Image (cartoon, rainbow, N blue to C red; front, top):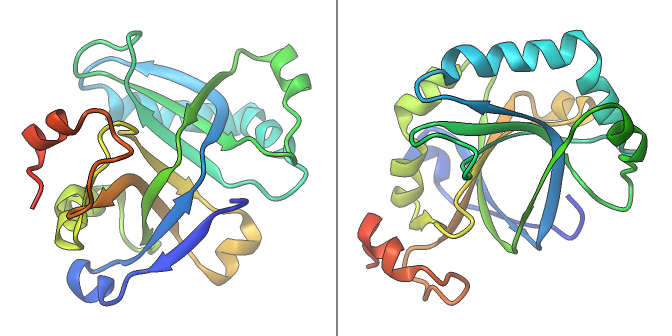
Length: 202
């Protein structure tokens, strides 16, 4: 979370039912354990994958690779290793001056992905709301209602689990999705034409 500025969105809870802020993050890299999920299998394979990481100590080892409390990120992405309609899911932490992954890399295959600077819309999801509840509310619809559009070039989202100390004061998990302001020029995105096909600019 270093060098990350936060802007709180007025009336976000009234509009969406969730507290929402914008994280202005510089470019960053995440590293962790990855799984290629075939089409239609995410509801079964991803929870089992996370359970296995917790049970065999790999998740604990990943968190301990950071000398400061680490946010655990669940990255949903796509690349050429995925089938059409499939997904890559990576349980990871953000790399920083506080992380040393050298010993972990000797023991396990790890996957890294880098993201260029952009804004991330952060939804705070209270413990009483399930993943199913949140997706029924549709984050893509909600970000549009808040005056933003999906930032297609970065084009990913994270399930986010804060460190224990943070969760004591802000219970629940979070959901981050790459965004740009709806009326902003697409000066950071080389694929504006593709963006316009999916979500027309105002």
